[in-house]
Length: 239
Length: 230
Image (tube, rainbow over all chains, first blue to last red; front, side, top):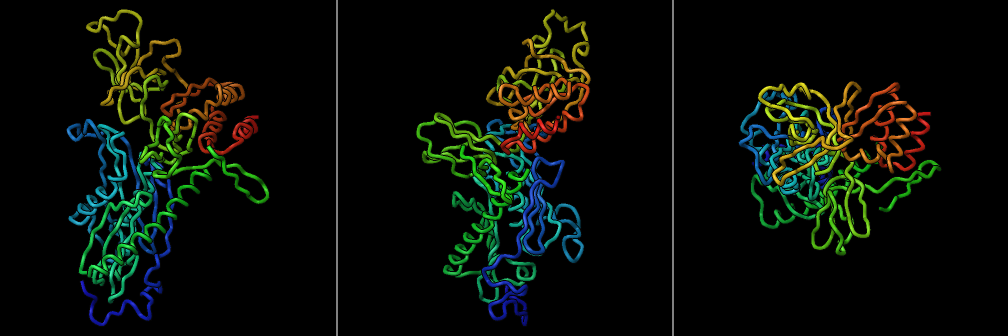
């Protein structure tokens, strides 16, 4: 996970795209764009764009999957073939299967699925442009789409990525930083409850670095939460 | 409910407060929990995006989006999805299908061995009925055993957000009467988010209903609809 020899990602405290270490890329959020879905959203973090659509709660088939006491959540993460520089082979693969599960586990604690016994809530996340931190961008989009679909939730889910590049601790890694980081970690939390729902780390960190990154991640999630709140309230107020 | 006042280019526009899931509404203080809220350490939080209603003895949230979850005694518009041996399966615009037993739909004696039930209702027929039972594991039964229930013939069916139905009906049915009189049409609203319209000026009625759906949380809506229909 160490940086490629000779590749300087941080010069004079500035990153490759001119950001400071703790800066987010420009964030843009929109809700209710997919007419056929019960709720949908689009979230952009710099050049990473995720579209999420929520269908449900709806009847669950095949019937043997139905749970009598609770509803179930199904997530599908997919990267479009045109989302990256080289063509991504379309269809499910090991990575998207894993990320679908990771997203489901990160969203489940926030949902009141016990209200939807025997039913399912389906979340589809499509990455239409990828430039690092796709799982957290997808999670932010999924969270907004779930709210706009009117699914019962204990809290929103807000996610961000943090990491270590050239010995510096940074927030919101882009593609090049992601590929050359010494360590990166995807983080999601329920911001008003202060509960962590996802923490997935890659690489090596000291305990101090880890604790500092955790603090960064929480602060960043708080900033992203404010944008989510603003997006949702503005949308429903202007309608 | 505390209305927030927003100033916009010199005009005063009143907007109702909106809460998001996880947002604190009020202390519980022994009050009953209504729909779409949950308690935590004697505090009440919203479960969905919506408008909080804080009353003396109850707290709930009127959702601004979301599907229909069936409740007993709701009056709904169902679409017959299949004909069974002793009744009909009805699509009620919820995650759970409902069953309409023959005995709850027809007054006369019917010999199921000899009678084809499509004689009463066939697939895709519309029925205005009442939810008579909802069991814990979401088995739903509907009934047509009351004077208001009936089969709906001709007309058009539109779908709206179920939570907006009370706003479409208005206080004591004022809003729906306004539309009915202005457009000379017959309108039936189902609490499951389906509205059936038949009459002379259907298009105008549909426009008015969709406007109410979009702007349900804005104050002074009745005046706007009155203006629109005049």
